[in-house]
Amino acid sequence: MSSRSATLLPEAEWAPLEQAHQVRVRRFTEPYLLRRSTGAKHPVEDFLFTYYNQKPGQLSRWHPGAGVILAGVTARERTGWKYYTQNDAGVGVDVVAFLSDRGATVDFTRTILSGTAARPAQFGCFGLHEWAMAYKSRLNGVRHEYLELRLGAEGTDGVVEDAKIRCTHFDAFRFYTPEAAPRNEITPTRENQRDLEQPGCLHANMDLYKWAYKLAPLLSSEIVMDCFELSWRIRAMDMRASPYDLSEWGFPPIRIETPEGKAEYVRKQRVFSVESQDLRRRLLGELERAVETAGGIEPGGTAQPCRPALPLR
Image (cartoon, rainbow, N blue to C red; front, side, top):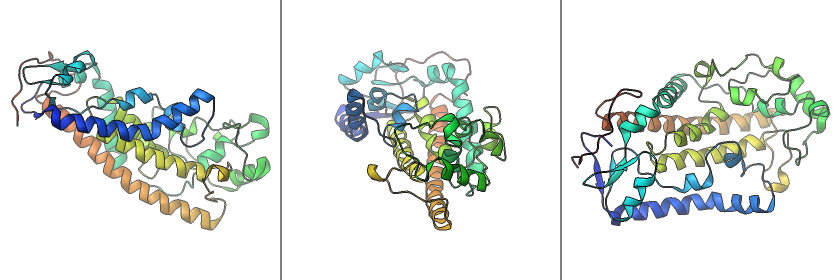
């Protein structure tokens, strides 16, 4: 926790923020935990807890982010949390220690976010990545075995075969069936990910949640949850445009095999693209401010954690 200046929050101010965050999180975690306890599945609402590595308990922890000092007796409990430290004023994130340990993650995240933000959005994919994952299902099965294919196996194959598929996102492409992969016009890899990500991609925009939680507690829980909720809404659209029939789950299809469905998909995709760009800018802003609180030390720089009292504003 090293800084030229920091914001001091008395417990009377930060405790309600923590409580509000936990209420916000429980709306999503409690139904998931109940389903998990009974073995039930949900094709939309489970995704952010099963695909991503952030556990419900980790999401529930409230972090003010870099440059905030929490005063009060209760704040001292955080001294046992990773990357927190205490000084005369209170408890806050040890930014220098975080940047020293997690510098590669910070650097990669900044590269991905800034590169994606700078590229033009592409709106011609029509969500065909999910169809490519179900291509030739009679040979490969389907990823969501408890769901029915809306057009059946042959109809799904026909949509894939009649389409031009240009998915730019590696973590979608890697789940293509072997027969579908050669149909993609480009070959995304982990190595070229930083060069291909673009802000029209639903999965790149869902991944804002991943980049945010990987940098907790450096980033605030507010922005993590903003990314989470965006990802939640994108997942709903992603599955509505998929080959699966989710009508009885309350998700009517976006029929991307029709001109009307394609137009609907692009309209919604454009809205999410704008939202995601705003969040990218906010994430980059918080990362830059975190570096500033460390006295300008860049990620991976050599520094000793700072323990003395911080100047307050």
